[in-house]
Image (cartoon, rainbow, N blue to C red; front, side, top):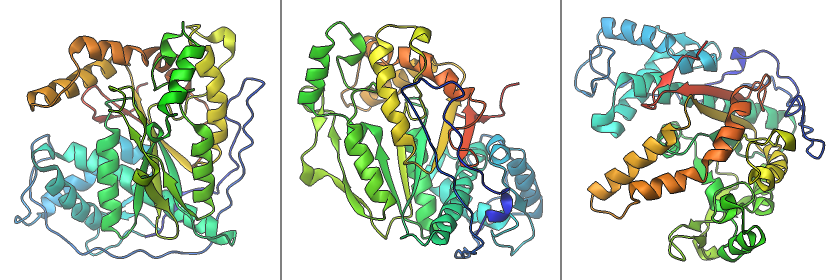
Length: 401
């Protein structure tokens, strides 16, 4: 299952911004291609139901897929916004395999059945065939390209490190869970890490708050400037060399919810020769510093300075998946939904007032840095970035004109 035929020749990575701050430089290195072909296991067929392409659950693995359903499904997939944005191709002939000249509908059907079973009553064609599976096939293509590049340079095999940017509540955790399920199904190993894992210690966070007592954005963890980027970069450097590393864990319940880094014995071992993909997710991945005179809030000055260090971190990532939303106010709604569901299940959660206070601390950064990320003329990772849009119901949509 190899995707190099899909793409034009790779180009050098371009500067991160047309007008970057003078203190922030980003000399991205070129990524050469390889002519080596790789192979992938051919999945066995599974059968899925004949059903209409709508929002109703489509689970019924005992029903044979009809030619009509198969044709409808192919048209539905091709019309999907993520499929089109990712530049995927689809072959319909029965018995085909996903290889150089496109993805195979048989593979979509098999993996779709796996997702339908995992999602249960939450399954529908939009979620399975317009959202999760196109993202999966894009990642698989990027992984093939990455492995070819590493092989061509005669380097030790190392994981493909993919950054994943999505606003809080937009579905990062759910997406990474099912992408991991699908890649594992195809014999690929995945490790998930988060920017949250790399918050500074509680003592260091208190010191930051004390140093900036009037800055409301730095009194708690969350903002750029409250992460240990030296530790993160050292982990990424080790992964890029094919070494195994210990990824820290962060205990958000420590110190009455202020949080603290977990003891080292609780850290997760990641990397080495047995990991194919590392997904690094974070709400502010892809954010870049802007000229100081363009800041909308003076409390963002320290955050803006910290984003210069984020640029150094981006040079250690191989690609980026960006989920865009049209209205940042949705973050409030999504968090309110989550907390109310938590409390309805009998578990402790934040009140509506606490949610407004919590999300409000992130809103200045969202409003300052999301738009420049979304409207970039040149992606952070040319040829290695998938940028999609979702609506208030977290469904993928075609780009607005």
